[in-house]
Length: 123
Image 1 (cartoon, rainbow, N blue to C red):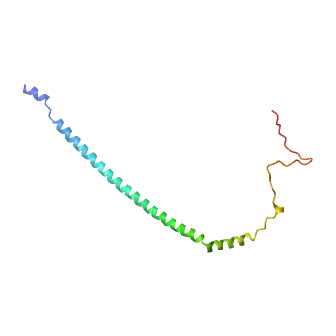
Image 2 (spheres, rainbow, N blue to C red):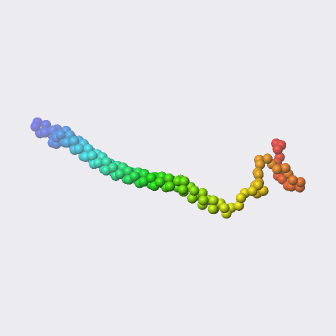
């Protein structure tokens, strides 16, 4: 009878082995997750540092542009630009009344002997 009893007994302790396998998988998974989080931390930190550098550069460019605007809108610069424009505009001729043509919305009355397009207004 003892041979029969031994045949149905587990040679390996499966319950204990399964517990250790689950524990090992949990530890391996949590280790991989820890490494993933650390990599994310480093990559996002590098991205933040690059964005901060870009922001500083944009602020510097903004200050340069604002100083240029202040310089160009000063009274002296405006006077100089007005003088330059006046010299350039002196080359052009003045527009007089005899050179102006008025265009209206109303149709001009036809002249005698003039050909014109005819529209059929009846359906």
